[in-house]
Image (cartoon, rainbow, N blue to C red; front, side):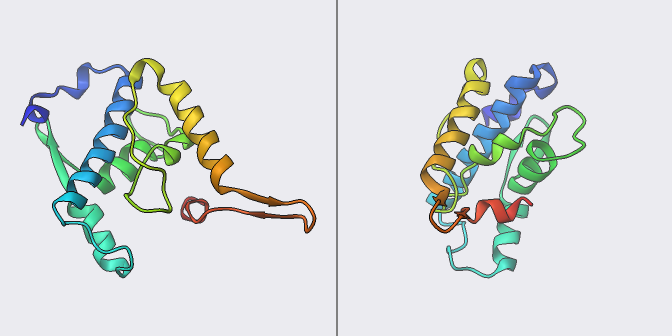
Length: 144
């Protein structure tokens, strides 16, 4: 209910980015805790429905997971935020394919996004020098 009192217009850009990263992660966790999230092996339709219909009211508007992720944080032409590709390593979908949820701070967001990106890649990207192969986690296929 306090989210309904938030005035996003007053937030500086980095605070806004941080706010939406944290809201996305909390909303996913909240939905998983309340059993509103589809099973990990669910087909595409239940997962799409989950991302379109799971939302919080912030100020006067409702923001779904899809709105936050695709419309704000990853948007190529968002009105108030430039896309920072490092957000992919900050957003937790509550699955093993994505990073674990954590809280980001606006004062250190740039450093925290850099750290999250490096940590995710160092733990999940595999380089086989002998065979000249690089194996990327599934998240890299999602955002081609």
